[in-house]
Image (cartoon, rainbow, N blue to C red; front, side, top):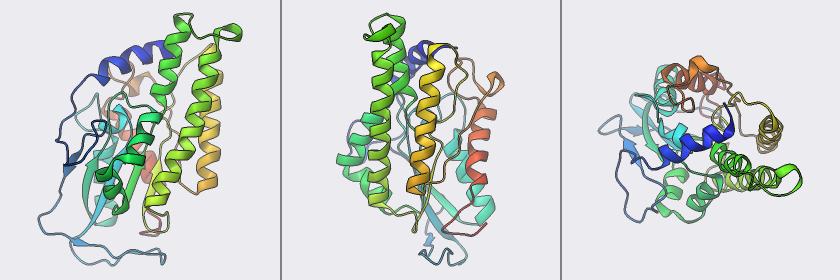
Length: 266
């Protein structure tokens, strides 16, 4: 599978309408799917002590950010809902999910949401759990130009180099915006980077590895726990791009293995 194939599939899925309604004042790029797990929940007490008050019925708000993988395209449940179930099972918390995943979203589009979408910023600032993934569409769009021989530069690879640089810059800005709204001392903040690492070869392998290396270093510097997920063909659905149920299970399981600090110790 080439990134050109990924690009074609991502363009197709970006035109799909995600379930859920816009909140008042919400930007067009961030449809919200909000599922409330309980009618009258108690909120958990959190802080730098690294523990929650284990009162019966306490609730954690979970905000998910990203592209079609966060939205869960390709399966009945995406990794967000599956991870929310893991949190419930492991901590006893009730989990209220606000899924801001948007099919086809790029890092630049997510950054605009974090800068200017008041409802998204408000949701993040009050969340106990935040996950994000982004970047596969940045690389996919560049691969389309490469395949069309319109990428430019040496060996027709200028757009690939530019896509990686832009993703790196936007990645740091996205992380900074999230951490400016909610601290790792206050919330479970996790990322799976691009969402998963596809199997690619040829010219694309270098740029994919470069992006993943940068994400790994950046998340270490910002103290945001990061899980890099590699899926084989048996973890992908019929479109060859989006995970199937087992693939989303694997992504959620990687997040689960990171534990729930600072709200609960391992």
